[in-house]
Each structure stands twice: as structure tokens, then as C-alpha cells.
Length: 555
Image (cartoon, rainbow, N blue to C red; front, side):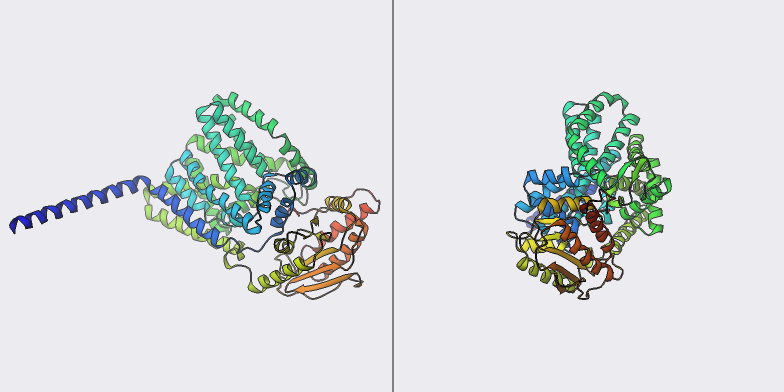
């Protein structure tokens, strides 16, 4: 019995030793890798949110635009972007893939969420490259709950694609500057071209990178020049489509535009963008900007140069640009600066953690709470979903449109109701859509598609830019009422001509009377839409070209 007891004691001590060794090994592993575990946890949390809330935000007309353009063939999509609309084509090509694979809005948003999620590890990698992995982890914590990330993670306009590719391009540049090999520069060229194919503002990112090479890496200037020339030459198709877009929105060089007229306006634009990257309430934004400035001062010199060159090149571009009254840059256009801003703030937080770890943790958690609160304030349906009554009315209207529309009907504007109706009836839903905020493109579309079928217009009383948003709309007919039929679905008033309009002149005449109803009902976009129709009708009557009616969004 004594031998048995001794054996059991030895086994117990051995087992205890093994447990202690295993625990020590686990602590050692976690001590070395906790930032990576933290990044994985942030990605997991962001994945859960984006997938759960994927369809919470109501369908938007820009998502309708992407999928409706994507219904065409690839040559048709390319022609539409290069000839009619301008801008970066990659978004529309991805939408083409979604549409032709049989998916709709859910597929487009899922793709957007995927690009947002794979951006988070790249934020961590960039932070590790510019500072260390702890800064990369904290920067990821700052990016993930921001309004810029959460909203554009589900919004099917693909700003998350722009974020992902800009991060990939920046990391490729740093790799090329380190190695200096042809393969490394070729990778940068590829990611740079993809970035400008994703969004015209990719040019601003490339400008910052070029300035960074001149300031901090003149020893790599020869390789950088060769790679830069390759981007300039290979990117000619993108520069041409950007010129088409600039022509539509009256963007040029020289300053003095209606939207950003000087240094003060540019600084306010950067301030609003910093608010959407953190929280737009001024005390929070002020603390975040202050932390970012302190972080930039305390960064390594090469990291500081990258951040300052990116911000300087972007600010200079806006100071030099002439932006027409319809070109309204918004915070989403600067989403490529979000990781650098977050890394700057994260640098300060990590420095604080070295002296006062509890305070750094509390500050980070408070910032995250403020960011989520701002995102909720900024886009509440992203969290609490579209009202049930509006969802039901939208479904009813979409079903009616899918059932009663004819293939030759002419739709005015890329209204989300049309998208839902197309998803219900892809085989015979109309393909002709008249842009609602560009009179030149609207008239070109009408002339190209004549003879025309019935005209269709949708008025939405629940839009946030209305004089008084509401979930019910009055049933009101245009004057004279005989050419029209009208249906009411909750906040949606659908107006349609009884007979085909046939000619562009007749469509514009009927459209003006339908849109006057929108003015009478306080619909926010009615003025812009009516101006588009009036200017197009002026040209159609033979009065020559006139000033365009334009909007800050691609309708």
C-alpha cells in the first residue's frame, strides 16, 4: 500500500508539473501572439455584424445603378462606363459578375462585406510595417467600428473594394522600396492599376505615394520612375474614363469651385472625414485628431513621411481642383486615408499604454463606444433596420411593378423599387433607365432607345432628404390626369403613362408633369429631377446645349 501511495504521489506531481508547463507555454505563446489573436477577434466580430446586418440598410439607387448596368454584356458595361458615365470600371465589372451569376442586391453587398473584412488584416499589417504589431492591432480596433467601415462594408457601391486595394497598393509600395526588385515593382504596378480601376480618387493615393518616394526614398527613384511610367501608360483607359466623369460633374483645375473653394473649406472637409473615421461629435473628433497629430510626431521618420505625404498630396489636390456645384466630395472618398489616420491614433494609444495601461484600455474602449454610437446616429437603419411598414410597402410595390411592367417601359432614375422588381422578374423587366441628374446623358439615352414605351416615375415620401419624411404619401395625379395611372404603396407613389410615349419630346413633357407632383408633395429630389427634364427638353426643342443638371451621386 505504501508503494501504491508513493506511485500515486509521483504521478500527481508529474501531472501537476505537466499542467504547469503547459500553462506556462500557453502564457508564453499568448504573450508573443496576443495582437494577432486580437486582430482575429476583431475580424470575427466585424464578420458577425456585417453578415447579420447585410440587408438592414434599405436598397439604394446607386446599388440599383451598378446592378442595372451589370445586366448588360461585358462590352456593353465597358462602353457604358467609358462613353456615357465615366469613372472607375472595376465596380461595374464586379456587379456584372454578380448579376450574371443570378445574384442580386444580397450578392453585391456580400461582395462588399468580403472586401471590407479582408481589409482588416491589411490594416494590421500596415500598422506592423510602420510601427509594430501592437499599433497594427489597435489600428484595426479603431477602423472596424467606424462609420466609414461599417456602412461601406454593406453598401454595394464598393468603397470597401477601394479601401482593400489602396491598402494592398501601399503595402506593395513599401515592399518594393525595401527590395527594389522587378517583381516587387511589378506587384505595385498591378495593385496601383487595380486601385485606380476601383475609384478615380486612387489618383490621390498615387500622388501621395509619389511624393513619399521623393521625400524619403530617393535611393529607389529610378525603379519608382520606371514603375510610375508603366502605371501612367497602362492606366490610359482609366484616365480617359475619369475625364468623362470630370466632364459630367464640371471638375477641372484652378480652384474656386462651389464645394471646396479654399483652405478653410478643405480643412472642414478633412474635419468631417475625421469625424466619420472616429465620431463626428466635436469633443471626440478633437481628441482623435489631437491623438493622431501626436502619434505622427512620435512615429519613425519613414512612417511619418508616408502619413504626411498622403495627407499633403490629397489636400493639395483639393486646393488646386475646380469642383463644380454638383461635385460634392464626401468622407467616403477619403476612405483610403482611414488606415493611416487610425495608425496615427493607435501610435498614441500604444505610447500611453507603456506608461498607463488601464488608461489606454479605457480610452480605446470609450473610442469604440463613441464610434459605434456615431455610426448608429449617422445611419440608424444600419442597426435597427428599415421600418416594417416601409418594407411591406416596398415589397408590394416591387411585386406590382414586376407583374405589370412591359419590356419597353422607360424607367426614370435608378429607383430601388425597380431593382426589387427586376429580381422578381428578370426575364422581361424593362432595360431602359433615364438618369435623373444629368440632362445630357438623359437625352442621349432617350434618343438611343426611341421609340419609347410607357414612362414610369417613383416618388418616395420616406426619403431622408424630403421636406418632411413620412411613411404615407398622398395619392395625387399629374395635371392633366388623363395620360397617367397612379398607384400608392405606403410612402411610394408610382406614376405611369397609360400609353407608350414613343418620342423623347413626349417623355420629357410627361415627366415634367409627373415631377411637378413631387415638388407639390415635398419630395427632396424633385427640383433636381425637374431641372434635368427641363434642360433636356430645351436641347430637344433645338435650343442647343445648356448647363447640365447634375448631382453628387451617380444616378
